[in-house]
Length: 137
Image 1 (cartoon, rainbow, N blue to C red):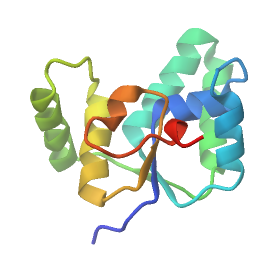
Image 2: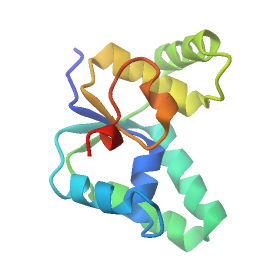
Image 3: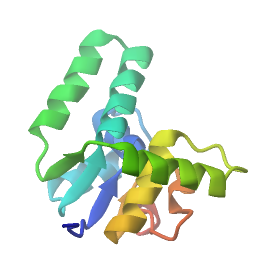
């Protein structure tokens, strides 16, 4: 059974929340202080961990993962073959854009789940019509 999630959380929102130097840090700090039900994917978590590893060091990567483990009400979805295939279809549909598989799977899931908003600073995550939270604040 598919349950409706109020917001899909993208890597850029998690990075902005965790990294004080990010332009969107104040917005996401405020939003994460009293969040609605949130959903993300294991791909997003892996992408965020990799970002902190590359930009900083392994210790910051582990701090990022500890932050994720403590985050409620964040639901992390594992991605199986069906969702990956949906992401690949999005990549084909928007082949003129520079989407990653992580982004495409997110777009697929938002459409499938009837997501109300996307917590991201990446404008291409609005391609399928789900509003970005950065436009509301």
